[in-house]
Image (cartoon, rainbow, N blue to C red; front, side, top):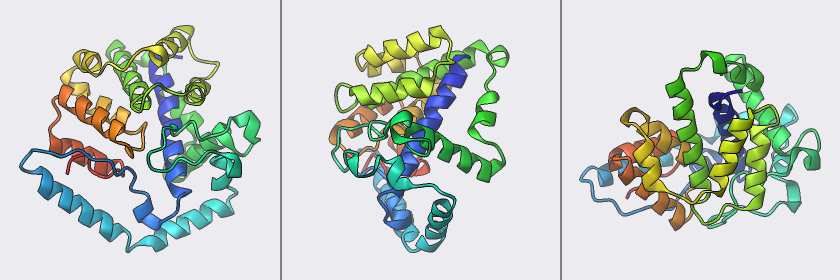
Length: 269
């Protein structure tokens, strides 16, 4: 299948889980800005940039009606956010929780055809169809191993490493998160890709090693891959991202801009 396609499947799963996680908490557009754990910055532009980001997020809370309309349409189409998050039986994933984004999702078989990982991927497919007329299957079909340059495959491997390392930022990755990642990888993945993911799940966090293997052109994608995997609501996660940013030689304004682009509070304040 190829590393690029494996990356796409895992990334789409995390993106969908992140969206479900935030929308299920409510709070209008303001609720869609995740994170909250921050690190004291030292760059002269950090404070001004952080204030501007806060102003933008505050303005977003004044425009909740479009979001409410979108949520109403999603519910009318049969998307049950409560079921996707595991219903009453799921462990809450509030601030400070060490449960990963995927850990809170029940398995597709346990949740039935409309919930869990299967429902989450279906939700991602529906969003893709709404945005560009393509479902998840069509998006994944674009990643053809035979047409993927070797350097792109290597870059995909780096991004997968970054995602899995971020999932361990609060400590050892839990067994549920591991199981959900392997569920996203799927049975159709190449044995080499499966072995690579399993190896990374068991490997210790190595920010310096990841940064050393990352060429300059891949620094932003690698950081962004880590960022999309976590909520950034604990000090451990914020400190991991700070260490990764420094190792990748990304300055504070650049990092804060990446956070805002992903709907997360700026890392540096």
